[in-house]
Image (cartoon, rainbow, N blue to C red; front, top):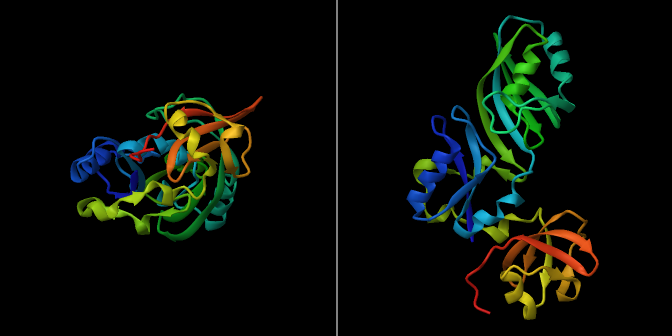
Length: 257
């Protein structure tokens, strides 16, 4: 099972990027975790074929962006810094009108919003945010404190540990761009099951405590990767009676047991 890191260019949607990847690699399925809009560029994690079912492992990773915020009027840098500081830490954000999620206020966390330079009314910045934070809306909300601002340019440079510097450009996609799924889930908690029970798990059975050889420090509700010699499924930790894991989605492999 494989995924790839794509440096999406401006001018195409994330879905269109997946279709291009499918065509170039001759795969049946491709899905991304974390949409980049038409006018943004940068890192997309794209899972291929069977690995599409492992997309939940990548959905809630922090995102890092570089961008340009255009001010609607000239303001003092101290005033700008003061406005930006109000949007670091926990914030309340309402998704924009064109978003695909319900437009209700929700809490999000901004780890930092660093102003790198200012050229006339263009503010070059870098920010690291919790998954699900809308940068365009963040810039708009900052602008409301300083006479208006809009997002002029946006590039996603990191998703969790993954960096756009290691991503493939869309016109250079080939088999060498593919990365084994197992090499990309260091951040995921894992359980390792006994060979005798692999077939049952791959057919969708819950995993019982007695079926497990070893496991990470798993907490109730954690998404986990279920391993034999390779990943065979993903699950949710329950800890109800003797049932340890309940498969939410089974990731089948080509291994013959």
